[in-house]
Image (tube, rainbow, N blue to C red; front, side):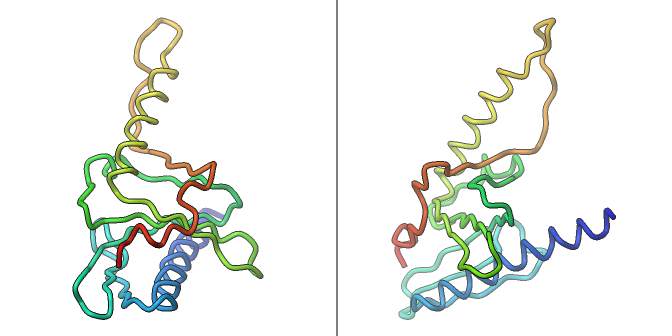
Length: 153
């Protein structure tokens, strides 16, 4: 059972990367998926003139909600040319939704959100409930839905 869930999670992530690369190509940009062991970036993208390049980290969910799981590294990795594209696959018959967010916004919101979560997670005796590397990014109001212009390619 665990192997099946792990495979499904891997396939969901891979599908998200290919959907993002396809959408970038459809919009007239060059998109190249990186090797699986490339830290912090799944796609390298550039405009046709080669005058602007960016890196992209994809996070994908198959659930129909605007919430994605990250790890603590996202709080400290926010170069100006690095973006997150959060993908919601949804129904297999429909086009995925893409939420395009600059890394500095992800870093700030995730850090603030985690700090607030920790404050609420105090034990009854007032001591800290412990730390976790798990973080969450949400776009509940679709603020970044289809904001491809933020890439400035």
